[in-house]
Amino acid sequence: MRKMTLGLLMCIILLSGAATPIYAQTGYGLSIDGDLIMTEAAPINHQGSILVPMRDIFEGLGAQVAYDAGTRQITGQYGKVKIVMKLGAKEADRNGETLAMQQPPVLMDDHVYVPVRFIGEALGVKVSYNSQYRIVEVFSENVGLIYQEQLPVRDSKDKPLTLHHQGNVRLLWSQSAGLRAGEYVVAASVGNDGNIWLKTTDDLLVVDAEGKLQQRAPLKLTDSTYIMASMSGTGYTYSYLEGTKTFPLKDVELPMADWFLKTAYDPVPVMALRDVNGQLIVQTDEGVAGFDETGRQVWTVGQEELGLFTSKDDIADFIWSMVADGKERLYLLTEGRMLVLDDHRQVINREDTQWYYPEVLPDDMLMDRGSLYKLEDGSYRLVASPPTGPATDMLSIDKEDWHQLHRVDPLTGQIRWSYRLKSPNYTSGSLISALSFEDDADHLYATTNSGYLYGFDGDGKLRFTIDSPYEADKMNVVPLSSTTFLVAVRDVLMCFEYN
Image (cartoon, rainbow, N blue to C red; front, side, top):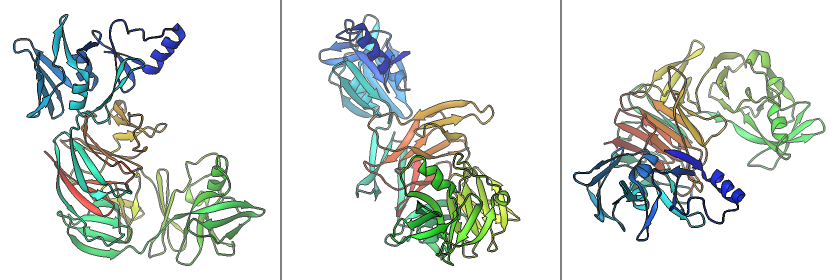
Protein backbone atom coordinates (compact mmCIF):
# COMPACT_ATOMS: atom_id res chain seq x y z
CA MET A 1 0.00 0.00 0.00
CA ARG A 2 1.67 3.21 -1.17
CA LYS A 3 1.21 6.59 0.52
CA MET A 4 1.54 10.27 -0.37
CA THR A 5 1.14 13.09 2.15
CA LEU A 6 -1.79 15.41 1.57
CA GLY A 7 0.57 18.37 1.74
CA LEU A 8 2.63 17.00 -1.15
CA LEU A 9 -0.52 16.25 -3.14
CA MET A 10 -1.84 19.80 -2.72
CA CYS A 11 1.51 21.25 -3.78
CA ILE A 12 1.35 19.15 -6.96
CA ILE A 13 -2.18 20.36 -7.64
CA LEU A 14 -1.26 24.02 -7.13
CA LEU A 15 1.92 23.82 -9.21
CA SER A 16 0.14 22.05 -12.03
CA GLY A 17 -2.61 24.69 -12.07
CA ALA A 18 -5.24 21.96 -11.93
CA ALA A 19 -8.67 23.08 -10.74
CA THR A 20 -9.50 19.57 -9.53
CA PRO A 21 -7.39 16.79 -7.99
CA ILE A 22 -5.29 14.68 -10.33
CA TYR A 23 -7.31 11.55 -9.48
CA ALA A 24 -10.75 13.21 -9.89
CA GLN A 25 -11.40 11.62 -13.28
CA THR A 26 -11.16 8.11 -11.82
CA GLY A 27 -12.95 8.58 -8.50
CA TYR A 28 -12.27 9.80 -4.98
CA GLY A 29 -9.33 9.82 -2.60
CA LEU A 30 -8.69 8.11 0.74
CA SER A 31 -6.32 9.46 3.39
CA ILE A 32 -5.41 7.85 6.69
CA ASP A 33 -3.77 10.07 9.31
CA GLY A 34 -2.86 12.65 6.68
CA ASP A 35 -1.36 10.18 4.18
CA LEU A 36 -3.11 9.76 0.82
CA ILE A 37 -3.48 6.04 0.18
CA MET A 38 -2.65 4.80 -3.33
CA THR A 39 -5.49 2.27 -3.45
CA GLU A 40 -5.32 -0.91 -5.57
CA ALA A 41 -8.38 0.36 -7.45
CA ALA A 42 -9.95 3.81 -7.53
CA PRO A 43 -12.53 4.57 -4.81
CA ILE A 44 -16.02 4.99 -6.21
CA ASN A 45 -19.22 6.84 -5.39
CA HIS A 46 -21.91 4.17 -5.37
CA GLN A 47 -25.47 5.47 -4.84
CA GLY A 48 -24.26 8.32 -2.61
CA SER A 49 -21.70 6.37 -0.57
CA ILE A 50 -17.94 6.26 -1.18
CA LEU A 51 -16.64 2.71 -1.41
CA VAL A 52 -12.99 1.61 -1.42
CA PRO A 53 -11.24 -1.74 -1.99
CA MET A 54 -11.62 -3.67 1.26
CA ARG A 55 -7.90 -4.28 1.87
CA ASP A 56 -7.01 -0.60 1.63
CA ILE A 57 -9.27 0.55 4.46
CA PHE A 58 -8.86 -2.48 6.76
CA GLU A 59 -5.10 -2.88 6.39
CA GLY A 60 -4.63 0.90 6.39
CA LEU A 61 -6.09 0.90 9.91
CA GLY A 62 -3.91 -2.03 10.99
CA ALA A 63 -6.71 -4.60 10.83
CA GLN A 64 -6.75 -8.02 9.17
CA VAL A 65 -9.25 -8.79 6.42
CA ALA A 66 -10.31 -11.87 4.46
CA TYR A 67 -12.84 -12.59 1.70
CA ASP A 68 -14.54 -15.96 1.16
CA ALA A 69 -15.71 -16.11 -2.48
CA GLY A 70 -17.86 -19.17 -1.77
CA THR A 71 -19.96 -17.55 0.95
CA ARG A 72 -19.39 -13.98 -0.39
CA GLN A 73 -18.44 -13.08 3.20
CA ILE A 74 -15.95 -10.37 4.26
CA THR A 75 -14.31 -10.65 7.70
CA GLY A 76 -12.24 -7.86 9.22
CA GLN A 77 -10.62 -8.03 12.64
CA TYR A 78 -8.73 -5.56 14.84
CA GLY A 79 -7.82 -6.97 18.25
CA LYS A 80 -11.07 -8.22 19.76
CA VAL A 81 -13.26 -6.28 17.32
CA LYS A 82 -14.63 -8.51 14.54
CA ILE A 83 -16.75 -7.23 11.65
CA VAL A 84 -18.54 -9.63 9.29
CA MET A 85 -20.30 -8.48 6.08
CA LYS A 86 -21.72 -10.09 2.95
CA LEU A 87 -21.82 -8.80 -0.60
CA GLY A 88 -25.19 -7.18 -1.31
CA ALA A 89 -26.31 -7.22 2.35
CA LYS A 90 -27.04 -3.96 4.19
CA GLU A 91 -26.51 -5.50 7.62
CA ALA A 92 -23.18 -6.33 9.24
CA ASP A 93 -22.22 -8.09 12.44
CA ARG A 94 -19.79 -6.50 14.91
CA ASN A 95 -18.98 -8.67 17.91
CA GLY A 96 -22.50 -10.10 17.84
CA GLU A 97 -24.18 -6.72 17.33
CA THR A 98 -26.15 -6.11 14.12
CA LEU A 99 -25.27 -2.84 12.39
CA ALA A 100 -27.07 -1.21 9.45
CA MET A 101 -25.19 0.11 6.41
CA GLN A 102 -26.37 2.78 4.02
CA GLN A 103 -24.85 0.82 1.12
CA PRO A 104 -23.75 -2.83 1.06
CA PRO A 105 -20.36 -4.14 -0.08
CA VAL A 106 -20.17 -4.78 -3.83
CA LEU A 107 -17.98 -6.73 -6.27
CA MET A 108 -16.85 -4.63 -9.26
CA ASP A 109 -14.11 -5.38 -11.77
CA ASP A 110 -12.80 -8.24 -9.63
CA HIS A 111 -12.44 -5.95 -6.60
CA VAL A 112 -14.48 -6.18 -3.38
CA TYR A 113 -15.55 -2.68 -2.36
CA VAL A 114 -16.75 -1.72 1.12
CA PRO A 115 -18.30 1.57 2.42
CA VAL A 116 -15.38 3.49 3.91
CA ARG A 117 -17.35 5.56 6.42
CA PHE A 118 -19.11 2.51 7.84
CA ILE A 119 -15.87 0.54 8.22
CA GLY A 120 -14.09 3.46 9.88
CA GLU A 121 -16.86 4.22 12.32
CA ALA A 122 -17.46 0.51 13.05
CA LEU A 123 -13.79 0.34 14.12
CA GLY A 124 -14.21 3.43 16.31
CA VAL A 125 -12.30 6.02 14.26
CA LYS A 126 -13.24 9.49 13.05
CA VAL A 127 -14.19 9.85 9.37
CA SER A 128 -14.77 13.13 7.50
CA TYR A 129 -15.08 14.23 3.88
CA ASN A 130 -12.96 16.97 2.28
CA SER A 131 -15.28 18.20 -0.49
CA GLN A 132 -12.68 20.55 -2.01
CA TYR A 133 -10.27 17.72 -2.80
CA ARG A 134 -12.85 14.89 -2.81
CA ILE A 135 -10.95 12.97 -0.16
CA VAL A 136 -12.34 10.81 2.62
CA GLU A 137 -10.15 11.56 5.65
CA VAL A 138 -9.76 8.87 8.30
CA PHE A 139 -7.98 9.40 11.64
CA SER A 140 -6.94 6.19 13.38
CA GLU A 141 -6.43 7.68 16.87
CA ASN A 142 -8.91 5.35 18.61
CA VAL A 143 -9.06 2.47 16.14
CA GLY A 144 -10.74 -0.57 17.65
CA LEU A 145 -12.00 1.26 20.73
CA ILE A 146 -15.69 0.86 20.01
CA TYR A 147 -17.01 0.75 23.58
CA GLN A 148 -17.28 3.70 25.98
CA GLU A 149 -17.91 3.78 29.70
CA GLN A 150 -18.09 6.79 32.01
CA LEU A 151 -15.89 6.47 35.10
CA PRO A 152 -16.55 7.68 38.68
CA VAL A 153 -13.96 10.47 38.54
CA ARG A 154 -14.38 14.06 37.33
CA ASP A 155 -12.06 16.32 35.35
CA SER A 156 -11.29 20.01 35.91
CA LYS A 157 -14.67 21.00 34.38
CA ASP A 158 -16.55 18.45 36.52
CA LYS A 159 -17.06 16.12 33.55
CA PRO A 160 -16.66 12.33 33.97
CA LEU A 161 -13.57 10.65 32.53
CA THR A 162 -14.33 8.03 29.87
CA LEU A 163 -12.90 4.55 29.29
CA HIS A 164 -12.66 3.63 25.57
CA HIS A 165 -11.93 -0.04 24.83
CA GLN A 166 -12.49 -3.02 22.54
CA GLY A 167 -14.64 -4.95 24.99
CA ASN A 168 -11.43 -6.19 26.59
CA VAL A 169 -11.29 -4.01 29.75
CA ARG A 170 -13.78 -3.57 32.58
CA LEU A 171 -13.90 -1.63 35.83
CA LEU A 172 -13.86 -4.02 38.81
CA TRP A 173 -14.21 -1.48 41.61
CA SER A 174 -13.62 2.13 42.58
CA GLN A 175 -12.90 3.60 46.00
CA SER A 176 -12.19 6.94 47.60
CA ALA A 177 -9.53 5.02 49.63
CA GLY A 178 -10.23 7.12 52.71
CA LEU A 179 -9.14 10.39 51.07
CA ARG A 180 -10.35 13.54 52.76
CA ALA A 181 -12.06 16.46 51.06
CA GLY A 182 -9.55 18.27 48.86
CA GLU A 183 -6.93 15.50 49.19
CA TYR A 184 -5.60 14.04 45.91
CA VAL A 185 -3.33 11.13 44.99
CA VAL A 186 0.14 12.22 43.83
CA ALA A 187 1.75 8.79 43.26
CA ALA A 188 1.02 5.10 43.83
CA SER A 189 3.07 1.93 44.19
CA VAL A 190 2.97 -1.64 45.46
CA GLY A 191 4.12 -1.82 49.08
CA ASN A 192 6.51 -4.26 50.73
CA ASP A 193 3.54 -5.62 52.69
CA GLY A 194 1.55 -6.58 49.58
CA ASN A 195 -0.76 -3.61 50.00
CA ILE A 196 -0.91 -0.44 47.89
CA TRP A 197 0.90 2.71 49.00
CA LEU A 198 -0.47 6.12 48.03
CA LYS A 199 1.34 9.42 48.39
CA THR A 200 -1.29 12.12 48.57
CA THR A 201 -1.19 15.88 48.85
CA ASP A 202 -1.49 15.45 52.64
CA ASP A 203 -0.27 12.06 53.89
CA LEU A 204 1.04 8.58 53.11
CA LEU A 205 -1.81 6.04 52.86
CA VAL A 206 -1.75 2.25 52.81
CA VAL A 207 -4.79 0.51 51.28
CA ASP A 208 -5.55 -3.15 50.66
CA ALA A 209 -6.18 -4.88 47.32
CA GLU A 210 -9.81 -3.67 47.39
CA GLY A 211 -8.87 -0.03 47.98
CA LYS A 212 -9.87 0.06 51.67
CA LEU A 213 -7.78 2.27 53.94
CA GLN A 214 -5.50 0.37 56.31
CA GLN A 215 -3.13 3.07 57.55
CA ARG A 216 -2.51 6.82 57.35
CA ALA A 217 0.74 8.56 58.32
CA PRO A 218 1.94 12.18 57.99
CA LEU A 219 4.49 12.83 55.24
CA LYS A 220 6.51 15.46 57.14
CA LEU A 221 7.99 16.64 53.83
CA THR A 222 8.63 20.07 52.38
CA ASP A 223 8.32 20.14 48.59
CA SER A 224 9.96 22.53 46.17
CA THR A 225 8.14 25.44 44.61
CA TYR A 226 8.85 28.07 42.01
CA ILE A 227 9.97 31.56 42.87
CA MET A 228 9.72 34.43 40.43
CA ALA A 229 13.22 35.86 40.05
CA SER A 230 13.91 39.33 38.68
CA MET A 231 17.27 40.89 37.83
CA SER A 232 18.51 43.62 40.15
CA GLY A 233 21.70 45.66 40.37
CA THR A 234 23.46 43.28 42.75
CA GLY A 235 21.82 39.99 41.75
CA TYR A 236 18.13 39.12 41.94
CA THR A 237 14.99 39.86 43.83
CA TYR A 238 12.39 37.14 44.11
CA SER A 239 8.86 36.47 45.28
CA TYR A 240 6.82 33.32 45.72
CA LEU A 241 4.22 32.63 43.06
CA GLU A 242 1.39 32.87 45.55
CA GLY A 243 2.65 36.05 47.26
CA THR A 244 3.60 39.64 46.52
CA LYS A 245 6.41 40.22 49.04
CA THR A 246 9.88 40.41 47.46
CA PHE A 247 13.18 39.25 48.95
CA PRO A 248 16.74 40.07 47.88
CA LEU A 249 19.42 37.66 46.68
CA LYS A 250 22.75 39.48 46.77
CA ASP A 251 25.82 38.88 44.60
CA VAL A 252 24.61 35.58 43.17
CA GLU A 253 23.88 34.09 39.77
CA LEU A 254 21.00 31.70 39.13
CA PRO A 255 21.64 29.49 36.05
CA MET A 256 17.96 28.58 35.67
CA ALA A 257 16.97 32.27 35.68
CA ASP A 258 19.68 33.10 33.15
CA TRP A 259 18.47 30.27 30.91
CA PHE A 260 14.81 31.34 31.07
CA LEU A 261 15.72 34.98 30.50
CA LYS A 262 17.04 34.03 27.05
CA THR A 263 13.49 33.19 25.91
CA ALA A 264 11.16 34.84 28.44
CA TYR A 265 10.52 38.24 29.99
CA ASP A 266 11.68 39.24 33.45
CA PRO A 267 10.64 37.92 36.01
CA VAL A 268 11.15 34.19 35.35
CA PRO A 269 10.41 31.02 37.35
CA VAL A 270 13.22 29.30 39.28
CA MET A 271 12.97 26.03 41.21
CA ALA A 272 13.58 26.57 44.94
CA LEU A 273 12.63 25.32 48.40
CA ARG A 274 11.99 27.09 51.69
CA ASP A 275 12.97 24.79 54.56
CA VAL A 276 11.68 24.58 58.14
CA ASN A 277 14.28 27.16 59.23
CA GLY A 278 12.92 29.72 56.77
CA GLN A 279 15.98 29.49 54.51
CA LEU A 280 15.57 29.69 50.74
CA ILE A 281 17.46 26.84 49.03
CA VAL A 282 18.23 27.38 45.36
CA GLN A 283 20.72 26.26 42.71
CA THR A 284 23.40 28.88 41.96
CA ASP A 285 26.37 29.06 39.62
CA GLU A 286 28.48 27.77 42.55
CA GLY A 287 26.30 24.75 43.40
CA VAL A 288 23.39 24.69 45.86
CA ALA A 289 23.06 27.39 48.52
CA GLY A 290 20.83 28.46 51.38
CA PHE A 291 19.87 32.11 51.98
CA ASP A 292 18.14 33.88 54.86
CA GLU A 293 15.39 36.45 54.32
CA THR A 294 17.92 39.28 54.12
CA GLY A 295 19.51 37.60 51.10
CA ARG A 296 22.64 36.58 53.00
CA GLN A 297 24.18 33.30 51.84
CA VAL A 298 24.26 30.95 54.85
CA TRP A 299 25.78 27.81 53.32
CA THR A 300 26.92 26.40 49.98
CA VAL A 301 27.59 22.91 48.60
CA GLY A 302 29.89 23.31 45.61
CA GLN A 303 29.37 21.98 42.11
CA GLU A 304 32.34 19.62 42.35
CA GLU A 305 31.04 17.99 45.52
CA LEU A 306 27.60 17.66 43.96
CA GLY A 307 28.97 16.44 40.66
CA LEU A 308 26.85 19.03 38.84
CA PHE A 309 28.24 21.55 36.41
CA THR A 310 25.62 24.03 35.24
CA SER A 311 25.61 26.89 32.81
CA LYS A 312 22.91 29.00 31.20
CA ASP A 313 23.62 27.17 27.91
CA ASP A 314 23.38 23.59 29.27
CA ILE A 315 20.40 22.45 31.33
CA ALA A 316 21.45 18.79 31.77
CA ASP A 317 22.47 19.38 35.42
CA PHE A 318 19.64 21.71 36.36
CA ILE A 319 17.85 20.68 39.56
CA TRP A 320 14.17 20.22 38.71
CA SER A 321 12.92 19.02 42.09
CA MET A 322 13.88 19.55 45.74
CA VAL A 323 12.38 17.88 48.81
CA ALA A 324 13.30 18.19 52.49
CA ASP A 325 12.22 15.48 54.95
CA GLY A 326 11.65 15.46 58.72
CA LYS A 327 15.34 14.70 59.31
CA GLU A 328 16.21 17.88 57.40
CA ARG A 329 17.71 15.79 54.63
CA LEU A 330 17.62 17.42 51.22
CA TYR A 331 16.75 15.41 48.07
CA LEU A 332 17.79 16.89 44.72
CA LEU A 333 16.69 15.50 41.36
CA THR A 334 18.25 16.41 38.03
CA GLU A 335 17.68 14.84 34.64
CA GLY A 336 18.97 11.33 35.40
CA ARG A 337 20.58 11.84 38.84
CA MET A 338 19.45 11.77 42.47
CA LEU A 339 21.46 13.43 45.26
CA VAL A 340 20.79 13.31 49.00
CA LEU A 341 22.29 15.81 51.47
CA ASP A 342 22.15 15.23 55.23
CA ASP A 343 21.23 17.87 57.82
CA HIS A 344 24.85 19.10 57.78
CA ARG A 345 24.59 19.49 53.97
CA GLN A 346 27.04 16.68 53.30
CA VAL A 347 26.37 14.53 50.22
CA ILE A 348 25.43 11.05 51.45
CA ASN A 349 24.01 9.69 48.18
CA ARG A 350 24.80 10.41 44.55
CA GLU A 351 23.61 7.98 41.88
CA ASP A 352 22.56 7.96 38.27
CA THR A 353 19.01 6.84 37.72
CA GLN A 354 16.39 6.33 35.03
CA TRP A 355 13.58 7.38 37.34
CA TYR A 356 10.94 9.57 35.71
CA TYR A 357 9.15 11.34 38.56
CA PRO A 358 10.35 9.78 41.83
CA GLU A 359 8.38 10.76 44.92
CA VAL A 360 10.24 11.05 48.23
CA LEU A 361 8.61 9.35 51.24
CA PRO A 362 9.42 9.35 54.97
CA ASP A 363 11.98 6.92 56.44
CA ASP A 364 14.37 7.11 53.47
CA MET A 365 11.80 5.58 51.12
CA LEU A 366 11.13 6.56 47.52
CA MET A 367 8.31 5.73 45.09
CA ASP A 368 8.70 5.54 41.30
CA ARG A 369 6.48 4.06 38.55
CA GLY A 370 4.70 1.58 40.78
CA SER A 371 7.77 0.39 42.73
CA LEU A 372 9.15 1.18 46.18
CA TYR A 373 12.82 1.85 47.05
CA LYS A 374 14.76 2.43 50.30
CA LEU A 375 18.03 4.28 50.84
CA GLU A 376 20.54 1.89 52.42
CA ASP A 377 24.34 2.14 52.59
CA GLY A 378 24.46 5.09 50.23
CA SER A 379 22.22 3.75 47.45
CA TYR A 380 18.57 2.97 46.78
CA ARG A 381 17.51 -0.68 46.99
CA LEU A 382 14.32 -2.07 45.42
CA VAL A 383 11.96 -3.04 48.21
CA ALA A 384 8.74 -3.88 46.38
CA SER A 385 7.45 -3.87 42.82
CA PRO A 386 4.36 -5.04 40.91
CA PRO A 387 4.06 -8.80 40.25
CA THR A 388 5.12 -8.05 36.68
CA GLY A 389 8.40 -6.57 37.98
CA PRO A 390 9.61 -2.95 37.94
CA ALA A 391 8.73 -0.75 34.99
CA THR A 392 11.21 -0.94 32.12
CA ASP A 393 12.39 1.66 29.60
CA MET A 394 11.43 -0.27 26.44
CA LEU A 395 8.67 2.29 25.84
CA SER A 396 10.26 5.71 25.46
CA ILE A 397 9.23 9.24 24.53
CA ASP A 398 10.91 10.85 21.54
CA LYS A 399 13.35 13.50 22.79
CA GLU A 400 12.43 15.92 20.00
CA ASP A 401 8.70 15.21 19.74
CA TRP A 402 6.86 14.66 23.02
CA HIS A 403 3.76 13.50 21.11
CA GLN A 404 5.67 10.45 19.82
CA LEU A 405 6.21 7.07 21.51
CA HIS A 406 8.74 4.41 20.51
CA ARG A 407 8.89 0.74 21.48
CA VAL A 408 12.56 -0.20 21.63
CA ASP A 409 13.95 -3.73 21.26
CA PRO A 410 15.93 -4.42 24.47
CA LEU A 411 18.54 -6.52 22.62
CA THR A 412 19.26 -4.41 19.55
CA GLY A 413 18.12 -0.96 20.68
CA GLN A 414 16.17 -0.65 17.42
CA ILE A 415 12.68 0.87 17.31
CA ARG A 416 10.09 -1.89 16.86
CA TRP A 417 7.09 0.42 16.46
CA SER A 418 6.05 4.02 17.02
CA TYR A 419 2.81 5.72 17.97
CA ARG A 420 1.83 9.37 18.02
CA LEU A 421 -1.23 11.46 18.80
CA LYS A 422 -2.51 11.82 15.26
CA SER A 423 -5.82 13.69 15.20
CA PRO A 424 -5.17 17.35 14.32
CA ASN A 425 -7.75 18.72 16.77
CA TYR A 426 -6.88 16.35 19.59
CA THR A 427 -6.23 18.24 22.83
CA SER A 428 -4.64 15.52 24.94
CA GLY A 429 -1.32 17.33 25.41
CA SER A 430 2.20 15.99 25.11
CA LEU A 431 3.33 12.67 26.57
CA ILE A 432 5.10 12.91 29.92
CA SER A 433 5.45 9.33 31.08
CA ALA A 434 5.74 5.92 29.47
CA LEU A 435 5.64 2.63 31.36
CA SER A 436 6.26 -0.90 30.16
CA PHE A 437 6.00 -4.03 32.25
CA GLU A 438 7.58 -7.22 30.96
CA ASP A 439 5.28 -10.19 31.45
CA ASP A 440 3.34 -12.68 29.34
CA ALA A 441 0.66 -10.08 28.60
CA ASP A 442 3.19 -7.36 27.63
CA HIS A 443 1.39 -4.40 29.20
CA LEU A 444 2.43 -0.92 28.05
CA TYR A 445 1.11 2.39 29.38
CA ALA A 446 1.61 6.08 28.56
CA THR A 447 0.20 9.20 30.21
CA THR A 448 0.03 12.81 29.04
CA ASN A 449 0.46 16.12 30.82
CA SER A 450 -3.30 16.73 30.73
CA GLY A 451 -4.30 13.46 32.37
CA TYR A 452 -4.84 10.99 29.51
CA LEU A 453 -3.91 7.32 29.79
CA TYR A 454 -3.12 4.99 26.88
CA GLY A 455 -2.84 1.20 27.15
CA PHE A 456 -1.03 -0.76 24.40
CA ASP A 457 -0.23 -4.36 23.61
CA GLY A 458 3.27 -5.49 22.62
CA ASP A 459 2.62 -4.81 18.92
CA GLY A 460 1.64 -1.17 19.47
CA LYS A 461 -2.13 -1.61 19.13
CA LEU A 462 -4.30 0.38 21.52
CA ARG A 463 -6.06 -1.74 24.11
CA PHE A 464 -7.82 1.16 25.81
CA THR A 465 -7.68 4.87 26.63
CA ILE A 466 -8.98 6.87 29.57
CA ASP A 467 -9.61 10.52 28.76
CA SER A 468 -11.91 13.49 29.13
CA PRO A 469 -12.98 16.53 27.06
CA TYR A 470 -10.98 18.76 29.41
CA GLU A 471 -7.81 18.52 31.43
CA ALA A 472 -7.61 16.12 34.36
CA ASP A 473 -4.80 15.36 36.77
CA LYS A 474 -1.96 12.97 35.99
CA MET A 475 -2.92 9.29 36.25
CA ASN A 476 -0.85 6.78 38.20
CA VAL A 477 -0.82 3.18 36.93
CA VAL A 478 0.18 0.13 38.98
CA PRO A 479 -0.20 -3.44 37.61
CA LEU A 480 -1.58 -5.73 40.32
CA SER A 481 -1.35 -8.95 38.27
CA SER A 482 -1.07 -10.03 34.64
CA THR A 483 -4.81 -9.33 34.25
CA THR A 484 -5.55 -6.44 36.64
CA PHE A 485 -4.18 -2.93 37.05
CA LEU A 486 -4.80 0.03 39.32
CA VAL A 487 -5.38 3.64 38.24
CA ALA A 488 -5.18 6.43 40.83
CA VAL A 489 -6.31 9.88 39.70
CA ARG A 490 -7.43 12.88 41.75
CA ASP A 491 -9.38 11.47 44.72
CA VAL A 492 -10.42 8.11 43.26
CA LEU A 493 -8.77 4.69 43.11
CA MET A 494 -9.97 2.36 40.32
CA CYS A 495 -9.14 -1.29 39.60
CA PHE A 496 -9.54 -2.63 36.05
CA GLU A 497 -9.42 -6.13 34.61
CA TYR A 498 -8.39 -7.32 31.15
CA ASN A 499 -10.94 -9.77 29.70
